[in-house]
Amino acid sequence: MTRAADELRGVVDGQGPEFPHRRAGHCGSGALRDLLEFHGLDYGDGPLSEGAVFGLAGGLGCFYVENSAFTPPFYLVGRTADLERDFAANLGIGLEVRETDDASEGWAWVRAELDEGRPTMVWADIAELEYLRVRMSNTRHDIVVAGHDPDAGIAWIADNDREELQQCSMESLAAARTSNGFPGPNRNTTFLYSWPERLVQPREAVHRGLARAVANMGQDAPSVGGLRGGLGLAAVDALADGYPAWPETFDEADLEKALGGLWVFIVKAGTGGAMFRSLHARFLRDAAAWLSDDRLTSLAEHYDELAATWVALADAAKRGDHAAGVALVGVVRSMEHRGVELMEGML
Image (tube, rainbow, N blue to C red; front, top):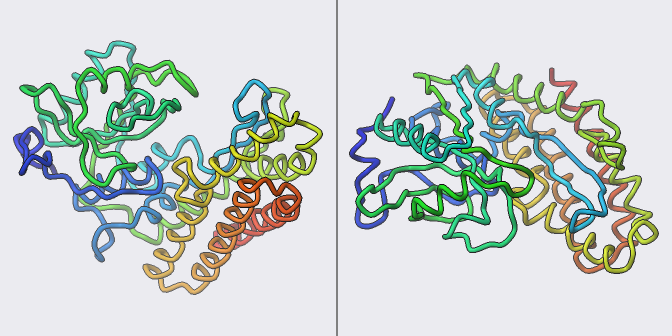
């Protein structure tokens, strides 16, 4: 299920190759949604939503750690690190992940895929992508190389942060793929998916997505390298336990950075706007429609409310209202635990 290679090298009205792309809330789920649409893989009602892709991948998770060496002095993320791999496993899609420190070798892999008519997802550092013009580093940013023009020396990139395909010089792309930035070297990581004729049946796929999310949130890691933090519900608990004491934990300057950073990590940093919980809620609504299961509709409502509570916590932090946040983070903790219980009841 490929398209002709010349389509991926050609330019259509100056807009790049023919590749379905729309802006997305998160880089990984957005890139994978685009690739599924390109290959015509769905459940019969047209292209899958980004939320459906996120949930089918079992993307729900949580990681939190406090560290005064960071700016802000903690790190928080609401998805699992294995979303791109679990997506393949849950939907019956083959996957080979390649890494190399040789930029030429890394590009050769991508070019070989494009020559076979297959747009390819890679990791890139946002700080090195010239079309984004940002300073912050993130070496785990998923983009799709949708095509290239060797004569012009550019690649066409599908990026969740932009509505249209972006032209990117080969020099910028190479730098973005060989970055040693935060959170670590990305080593030209390339995701080579083997696209099937059809996806795993929806009932089985939904079950796998829910089971993966429950497993992600149930990870037993109450600390991270001796620092306050954790994975899954332990991460939520660590945030809820630590947040009330932030004025004593951090000096005035770090507290201001922490409160501002909390808003960014929940709302702004490619989270779908609500710590990834709104994406999970959309998955549950779509799954309820596929399976005609009202229990999934009720579960979606719970995660919609949880998403709104995370956003309320972020807004309180943004306006510097730490006291309001203390009550909200307690509600977040209770709702996160309840959400996992409800998902377990569906398995």
